[in-house]
Amino acid sequence: MATEREQFEQISADYAVIQKTMNELIISRQKLETQYQENKIVKDEFDILEKDPSSSSNKLYKLIGSILIPTNLADSQNNINKRITYIQSEISSVELKIKAQQAELETKREAILRLRSKIGSGVAA
Amino acid sequence: MATPTTKIDITKLPSEQIIQLKNQVQEELNHFTSSLQALTTAQTKFKDCIDNINEIASSSSSSEKKEIMVPLTGSLYVPGFIKSENKFLCDIGTGYFVEKDSKNAKILFQSKIDKLTKDNEKLTEILQSKADTLNSINNVLRSKFKEQDAAYQAKANK
Image (tube, rainbow over all chains, first blue to last red):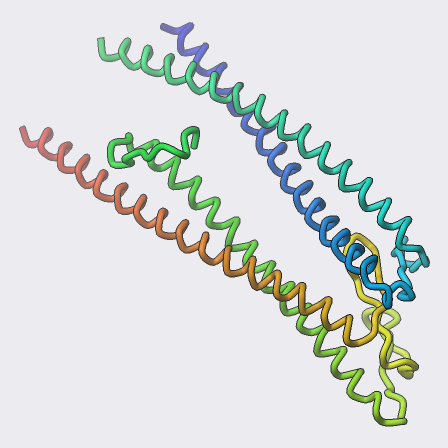
């Protein structure tokens, strides 16, 4: 009985830890999503610039620190495409981690429920 | 949460699980509300951009150059003149800026506003359905507690 209670507490603690890492993962997933969306918007804008020949004369700048550096469209497109692929790979890796954590969370939850009903029935009897 | 496709009658769930569900929905609701606020702020910002472009471009007919105060820091300004009324540097995100004339700059900001308006509508819809869900959960919870209370009373009276 006492060991069951100890076990229960142990698993509950584990559960809380997993939940915390899970929350952290979800936050980083959200951050990545924001970055992904922002980069996609920039990419769309570059595509518009590329199609529009009249705007090819438009100057393009990149903000580095607090200085605007002139840059060209091809380089920037390259850059943004690389960034998007990088962010996508990051997203899938975080998502894999989230799935693993979710599975673990589920098993722990079941263990907790099992133990709880065991302890409960022990008290009732 | 684990089975979003199958409908579960929440009146059959134990109250602690309903409370858990309620907290979850509440959290989602908070999240969406703050997102909506952020969207509205962004929209006003872009609208301000268009207003500013109109303001500057409208003076292009007059030969007189527009005088403005240029902020060096938040609290230090120097007087300056707008040399070209038809050139705007637009922030398109992640540190990239494009030089555009007033027409194209306005198109850029307007398309951003339109996109945000669409998102705004979608979000409002989601928000409404979440609020409804929360409401019904609260109702179930209340009737559940009433039942429990009544059962407890009945037991105590026996």
